[in-house]
Image (cartoon, rainbow, N blue to C red; front, top):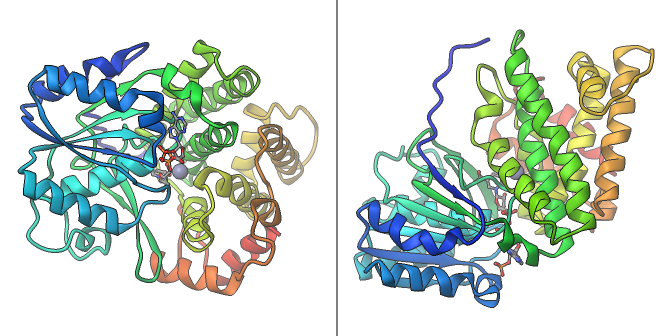
Length: 390
Ligand code: NZQ
Ligand code: ZN
């Protein structure tokens, strides 16, 4: 096991009705003027935005709102939020939504106190050393941004989708998580969220670091629970306990606990980010196509961990080589994704004629000539993995 530092300063309030505590929690952070960020309208329609604004008003927190954040959020909305936040003199940000809204809120929080262009941080030209506090009211369990130190923004110019990872500055100070708010999710978004949270664990599970049994077992346990509860949620969208289990899984999948003590991989996410940047696909649906293809490549080239995954998580109980077991595990993983209604090929994802050379060029331009933690990959190998998605 490798040395590690693990810091999760987020306070979680979880359960029915917790969004009405937003005002108290935001006020307790010392925030007196908040920018409230939301998406394309689901938070207005469900009434959660209204309850959050009312709760802030009751706690004497002044507010200004910024709606219209789109999935796979763009830098334009961040810039709009920075300008609005500065004009109104805000000292904190409240995100009401999912990964796209939260990531936009985080970028605004980093951009307001910074003299230069916020994109400097995403472009790797500068490092965040200050940010306004961010509070989250989560409406979709998927990206895990409510507990992560990351923010994924796409620069419209060149459609560059970049994930910025910080240890501390971009972690929300408080996250309010009411599973009832997820009852209104369309099945496709619920399913894409389930895939995304599984991918967050698997990106950490497939590691070259030996002797990380505790982190492996935590990861395997959460993965198995997600599949079990995921089936229930798809069959019964208003099953509170299944929704609650899935919601908390999404946080555990991505708050760092499943990566402690080891090298992580993140190639599948990098490959998916190019798909969602170029073709606008839903992130989790893209991962349902990318992850099995990446794992198939690994079954052929480094099968020991994929075989362990097959035995322990996918319950493959057969004799055979590591590669044979791994391939059976992958077949079961694809079956699970299909059972959720997720695509497992690029054509099923709605990209029947992908420009693979362009995807590979962008991937290595953005992430470097050699990528991956479990297995190092260059352009010929990433080309092969994109082809496995056809
Ligand atoms: O915009 P509205 O109208 O709110 O609709 C949203 C959106 O269309 C809808 N939705 C959300 N909550 C709802 C709801 N519809 C009905 N009822 C509700 N309760 O769901 C759609 C998707 O929302 P979005 O925020 O885009 O989903 P998600 O949480 O999956 O976020 C995806 C983004 O997060 C990034 C992805 O790349 C993508 O840009 N990621 C962020 C990460 C992080 N910051 O740590 C890690 C992830 O790996 C991921 O890359
Ligand atoms: Zn993800």
